[in-house]
Figure 1 (tube, rainbow, N blue to C red):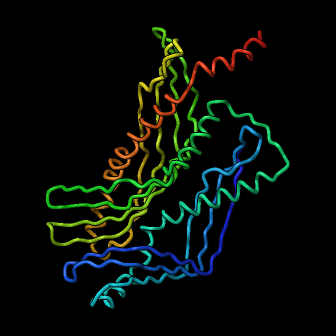
Figure 2: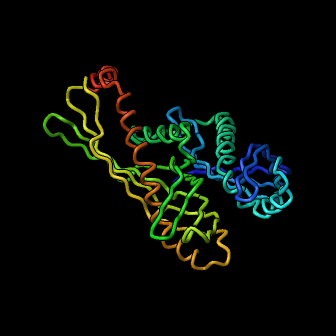
Figure 3: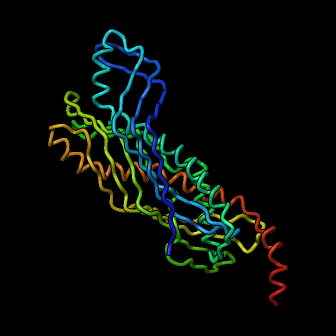
Length: 326
């Protein structure tokens, strides 16, 4: 059985300031400050509660969403076409906000989780910690993934051309990479004086957003935003440790598996063929982009953790406990 905590924030007016750069074919380029005002903002979230080694409850993986009643945007230094562009930008305010939404939720998530955990730390009750050492290591790894800025995670932009059709995916954000947990049991075997551990972890459902643009023949083009979900991301790994504990463990195998991807289209307009094209090709493009973006960091991070282990020190610390059992 799992426990959860619900959080909610209401803000009458949320003001966002930043810098923009705009390039158009008939007015050149312009840049300067911009302001986005959101009214009647509602931020809601649900987080899992886990027991730490100290017996204290701690909120993990708070999933947040932000809703608002109205949005207005002001861009300075737009030039002589400012009135025209200001009207266009205001009409697609929600579309543009989707591109900066992950930045906002990332910071809010960190602040809310910190405040919730401060309140949970005040509880006088201590809870029994029946978590296995491996599951505890996974819990600590989840925290490390968030601290390193991998949840939410910004993927590199992607450009794909096939025949006379070009698809660009920009500002691709994925949320939920830190929601991984153990799948099944670990297996341990010994071969040629090398101990090998096989483990399997997987995430819960991942959510994502991206900005897309499709060009046909280099002339007609359409752009919009897409929300998508990934059923899961699973990782199977094999780690080898020589009996000579002076040597570091090595990641010998790593297998990634991505679940079903579903997309929800926004901003396609009346071009039904664009919608049909994107619905058919976007899942495969996103799958390739996600796998290419996460495989390298996962391999590097796992090996970094293995390299940081001081097995000689760990064995020396555990020997007295073993002596007490004998």
